[in-house]
Length: 168
Image 1 (cartoon, one colour):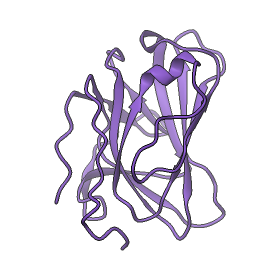
Image 2 (cartoon, rainbow, N blue to C red; image 1 turned 90 degrees about the vertical axis):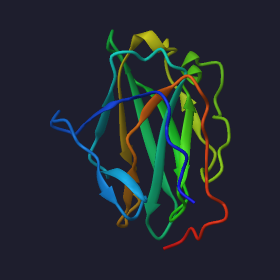
Image 3 (cartoon, rainbow, N blue to C red; image 1 turned 60 degrees about the vertical axis):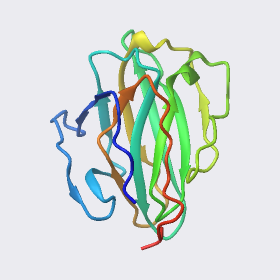
């Protein structure tokens, strides 16, 4: 079973040098994907008002990995931090409620296929977002994250195919 299509508007993805990155076919994610590593991948959008950042993820590693999202405001300053644990080999869809940026919660809502996530930092409204940077924390071993094209959506859309074989 393939994942349901993402709704909403796609984000623009940039590499560490600021160049736009296009998704390429990925048998590992079974969808067009962008490779994310310890180098920073940056998401940009003209309108951050939709409530959810929705993206398909799959980690190739021997152990769990940590995805670090740093949310920068237009005014500058320290970024708002979001840390998510990823289970290797499991295809999952992150549907991140951007209301977490209001600073009223520490733990993210749980999603199938993701370990408990935490959020901390200076409160930030969605209309103040400049960009979101993603990177895998250094785990001391080889890790590869296939990331589908991120979308901003008004609709919450978590998904995981529990019936399909997950490890590869």
